[in-house]
Image (cartoon, rainbow, N blue to C red):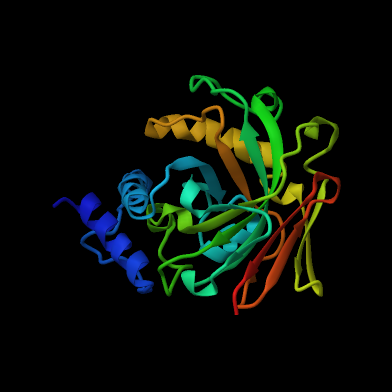
Length: 262
């Protein structure tokens, strides 16, 4: 068994057992980002075998200063969205399915066409490939006690610490909105409010999408028609508690809601 396979098996054991560790064992921890994504690919295969379903797009982590400081990294990371852990707005999720429940209000995109992998995408040039904007909540979950110390490669290996994705109704006439200036908010139990905006995401949510489109070909991947992409945190981080009701508010672009069992 090589170190990539061993790391994927180890992460799967942590996921199944709902356990956390300080870090991956040194002998199997990915030594660089390339190895981290190799482990991620193997780990996602194991998640699909366990949950069923298929991949349905990508999540991008560490696209805001808040997220990068919280995780101790200086570059965005990507992970895979899975149909088995992607839900429509209004879902109630078992709180015990997660170790952390870190809630993030994120701009999602639905792609209308395959993106040619041999282009240098920008905020402007990637617009025609976007079929819809999707208001979304990501629930980050991870297996590490010292999550701020494990580093980018290990975070990438753990599918960029993705737990679940909840999406609201897609908005197809999104072009008339300035996504960078669009206000967002995470509203907890109709009381606490954490404000944000699209500018928190690399300056513009489409900048995160362009980053992903440019990054994926380095790993033999590309964006396809029908893929969803969640672009990262727009507000402060909130660790949801059992019984919480969370609402992501995107103003005229809609809302998305999730509740956790007590």
